[in-house]
Length: 187
Length: 135
Image (cartoon, rainbow over all chains, first blue to last red; front, side):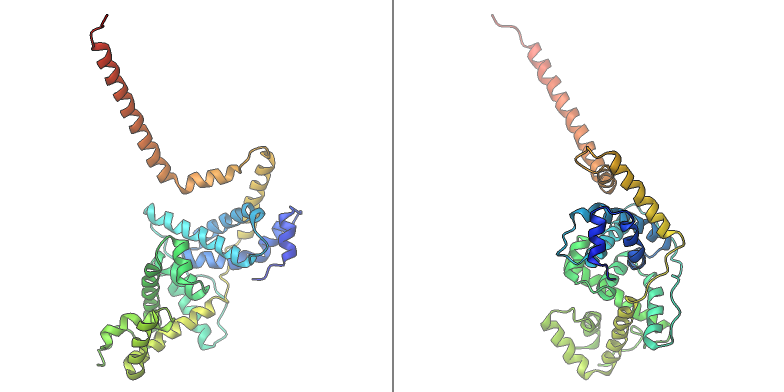
């Protein structure tokens, strides 16, 4: 996601139409990130709206020396994690995850795996999904994730490892890889 | 080490997320174990698949863009109407919403403390008025 610096400056100056252009050019990747963390299309749409309110308010304080895309993703992840935490605290059950509407696979092995994994992500518990999405999809460090989630790096790693294990199980149940848990010890 | 001791570390090993000394032990085992090599390959495939996920976009629901624009324009307008306030009303609303449990707890503690202080004040006042006046 590349956002021209000129557009950001236009938004900060309050030029008519600039914020709309910013939303148009960024809302798809932002929605994708939020969807992957909250695991539900309806909730993701609400949270994405909240993200842009936060962006609009925060953009005045945004320092130009930071990368805007990084900042935007951070705002989005923070909003999504806050929502997931609140949802868990309120005991509100997650709606059954509907399958996301994804672009058709071009047939390569990696893309087929990605399609399977995208669906499998939606079946993970909230805390595992958030961690594996931020680490393995968006490349955050465990330390960054821990700070953002208000937990320790060690706790993040535990969730991450469990999530990877479960995703590998999903690939195994689809016959893509060898099962991880049913084999006997080799030594 | 045995496979059952190594296996829990494999999801961290494939991502390079283990401490170096632990990673070395796991690497030494995997290098000599066909079973754990296969398992590592499965987990590695998860990681490479997830890296491809990053480049894909989930199709947003119809009307999302319009919803964002409508909601943000409402708030833009609201800030214009209240330019004299030293803070944004929306920020306060969001802050209260995000921390309503904490605020409710604090309010409860404040009420109990106020009640206790009042009871104490009444007791002290009653004790003073019960003392005989001295000339």
